[in-house]
Amino acid sequence: MKKALIALVVLVSTTAGLASDRHADVERLDNSAVILKEIMAAPDKGIPQEVITNAKCIAVIPSMLKAAFGFGGAYGKGVASCRNANGWSAPAFFSLRGGSFGFQIGGQATDIIMLVMNQRGMNGLLASKVKLGADASVAAGPVGRHADASTDWKMRAEVLTYSRARGLFAGISLNGAVLSQHKDDTRDFYGHMVPFRTILLGEIPSPAAASQWHSALVRYAGR
Image 1 (spheres, rainbow, N blue to C red):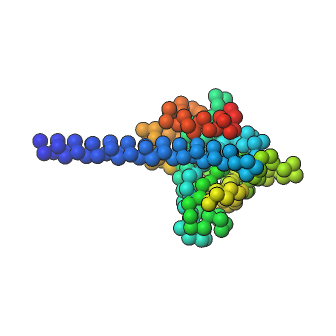
Image 2 (cartoon, one colour):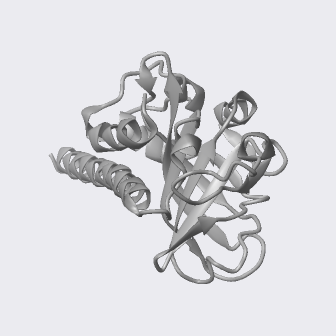
Image 3 (cartoon, rainbow, N blue to C red):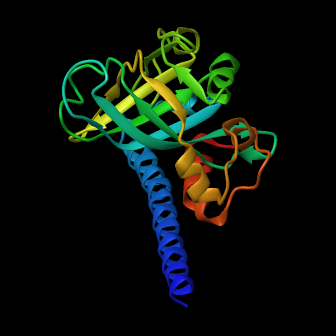
């Protein structure tokens, strides 16, 4: 009887923990949708429309942290989706750590947006782990209502990156940062492990919990 009671307590505690972890994943998805909405709503200070509508994949990290200046001091968790024949894929959960982030991040939390612009960049993302600047070229993205005709954003990099901190939105280099699938968050959200590639290629349906994220993608980046 005592063993059965202990087992029941453990089961209930585990179930509650899983529910709590999934709630955090859903919250991260909703926050990412809000960040995309706020940035694109800023007149003349958002991502140029022709840039975001040409992106093959979009990734957002709400509140990335950098504890100290220097390599390896930054860490954040985010979500990404890629275009496919049926629209946008289900969300894939990842972490981003390390890299040379410049001085804008400082010690405060910073929102990060990454746009994968071509097939080579997408192939790197599908590998479940990619080092920006090595496995995929990365550059600070252009800012404004429209990209300047003189900019070469179509040719510059596989991944264009942006940051927002203390109301300032700008392109930022994330050279050297490593993006990899966050397996624990993936299990928490989907109930079991699903490979990055399977998610991003649209081979699984997107749960209802990702509806706000998907609505933001369609509204600002199109189908």
